[in-house]
Length: 239
Length: 239
DNA sequence: CGACATATTGATCGACTTCAAGTGTAGTGG
DNA sequence: CCACTACACTTGAAGTCGATCAATATGTCG
Image 1 (cartoon, protein in one colour):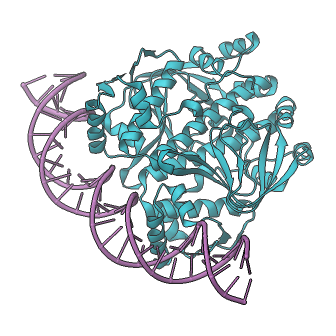
Image 2 (cartoon, chains in turn red, green, cyan, yellow):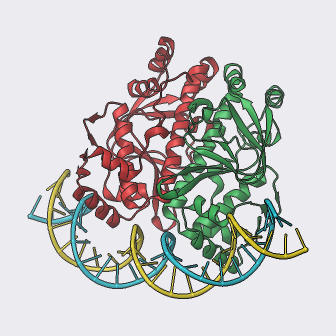
């Protein structure tokens, strides 16, 4: 396995030397994907789980009439399909949003971890539970906020999640999302994403050119988004 | 602990006699709540997790301007805050939607299970992962379906989840949700919930009087909802 | 350069919200 | 037992946010 996961877990609890060794030493094949390539497909029964090392990915589902909804954006350090370890059957697809590299960890290895390392097991469990917390927040944002709030919230959340794994520079970070993709994340049409983005820009909250986002006024953006990072559980404590 | 959880887990994998004994024998205090009473509050650090034995509950978050979004409806057999075992800090509230009874299982007991019963641990982990799968589906429904589809989907999902734990009679079941509450689940205004419900009724898809729902035409309701139960992972297999 | 996706703008439409008012029903307390 | 309150449900009317349709940039890459 590797680095960004240790950063991510280490942000929430102390990893023993032994546990780090188990994580680092886990046999994992490295796989590279091109942008737009599917990593996992609905109906798959993965025998390994994929830890995103570089690049971005997204979970999504397709509905009738060609509609698509992205349910989660993944950044380096995220296990994109750790849930398949207990779920077995994938109920959604996962696509690379940019060129990306993953470490594929055999479920056999994860199973051995659950047999031999209870604390590390709880941390992996925690990992899926934080995914759940992010999902809940997404429901709240899509259910009750308007387009401005949704877009602002997306930017706030990704900024914080990228900061944890060292993928930000000041308030600037890479975010390889097209406007149609943003629409699929927020449940909005492309046209409306475009107009909302222009609003945030002309309000001086951020710039977003090509794949680079720069937050110009964090405080105001946070207020527009009603963003409170508690749900990301950035607290270091025994688990 | 108790029954409906064993039904729910037993639907997904075989529980050994030993594991059932561990679940049944877990020390758990029983707590009764009145409708509208909060079981868990944002900011709490629970030292036990609550298994819903009777009645209904909901997880929700409050936003500015008094808006509320319910992120999950719980039925008997659900662990309403199992995620607090690894998450520690609650990032949302949980309310009893009806009079309800829970079994509160000490985290100390859960911890012992993770130390001594790896397979049972995976099943509890699975439990939180299924919550996540339900959340993802909720995101899709709220993000991309109109009011009719959302309401139909809610009814379909709850029917299936209640059937698993034996809380249905044919296509009829109890669902103690007021129209304002339905609005908070679906991200809609009360007025629009009312009108949409009338539509579904006059289309002959269902009846919903007071707290009793009766699905009159499952096939058509399913189509309106674009409901596919795969995400509920109702498959019995080794985990 | 040509091809194709992405971004942008304008105009129209409609689903849903908001505001307002009236009805029904259960619970509370004098 | 009835007055009073509170809330859920229902209906009407008006307003708005965002979708849809359509066309025109702009940019990128082979």
